[in-house]
Image (cartoon, rainbow, N blue to C red; front, top):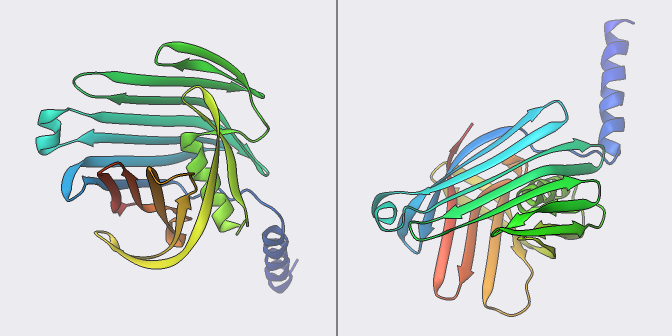
Length: 232
């Protein structure tokens, strides 16, 4: 095969792949975020997404610093190991820890087929799941993929705190966002909830394969903002 035929063949193969429904996972990523409550800097969140073949490991670690660390020593660890193939992403194990000086809560879940088994706050659960159910961490990866493929409906079954929940996201248009790590063109996506007690908005950047560069969560009188500082 001469060089011209090789180029033509490679281009044609790429076009065929783009035309198929391929599960395009976000690229491997290491990123750091600042976490604020109002204008007060509470701490930092480190995020890591790594791959080994068709296996993925997604890890987030949030720690209080400064005055917040002295007061609460709060930390949150969230991690999931799973696999992906074709149009399917499958969490295998999920772990969540939230702790302060006063208390802590832990969620441990193991996925096997359509069954989720685990514990939340030391209470055991064993649930049968609809096809495609994910955990709270894998949800961000599924959302990123569906944004990349411009999927019209962003509705997901999520295993959370020992219960099956439905998450629905709604696009809120685009916004050019200035962060400590530069300017991003983002798509705003909010979590659809009934009532107005809580609201959560994500700013997803195409440059980062629609992983979040900013998250704002409002609940009661608190506003928690997470914004990217750097990534590699």
